[in-house]
Image (tube, one colour):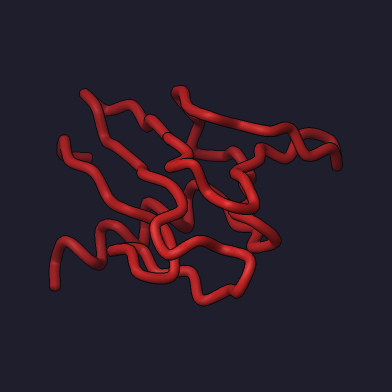
Length: 90
């Protein structure tokens, strides 16, 4: 992973086409081989899923195997990273 950051949302570099996801919902940053996720004051929130429970998440380091939700859109951090890598090759 290289250092850099990607906006996640309906109008971000990592597009999530879901009506509960803000146009600029969150930011995923690559910092020295670690992943940092920041909610950008989204309308419907960013959450970590842990044992079926949604936990509100504002910002912090996250793990590759973490499951997250942006509004009602649920995905893995691994999926976001893959999409970011594809975007950086375009």
